[in-house]
Image (cartoon, rainbow, N blue to C red; front, side, top):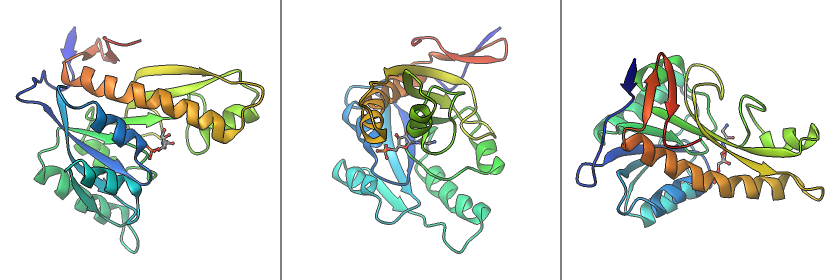
Length: 213
Ligand code: GAR
């Protein structure tokens, strides 16, 4: 049995994308740069950090940009506020673009199979923080990035696409991270476009992105 995850969108009725961010937002920028003529539109960006440069990127692109700080409130209360913005903007797909907070099972449940995360490692290796450093510390010869659907675990969930990045002898964390991010910027918009094109499917309970590797 093959079932569609999401819906098939069109240029006149694009997929409405919300992006959660905590920092620079270079992955958000990659989505914004490729959305003209695509099947998706970024309609709202929500940051949990007031000074996140991602907010400037959103505003410059004419996209609604909201700060919802998490200090002094419970995770549940914070996520309930985030959820209000997502609903107000009729978001259909949620992208974690460098969002450095673990989501609660409640929020994941609200968005099951509708949250995409980009992670700077070839999962399931090196989940969590400092993935590029972990790859270097292990003496890996290949690193990379993964775009996956989010489930209740940390950096788990069905893998939609991956890209490999060779590790050079002279690499340090910063140089490797830069090359990994270049691949993220290519991969993430491709996966979001594939999702909007109805190319993310559940085959016998296993989710895959058929257009990509
Ligand atoms: C990205 O490299 C992304 O892979 C990583 O944060 C960076 C955010 O950069 N995410 C994670 O590590 C999540 N586990 P950006 O703000 O410039 O898009």
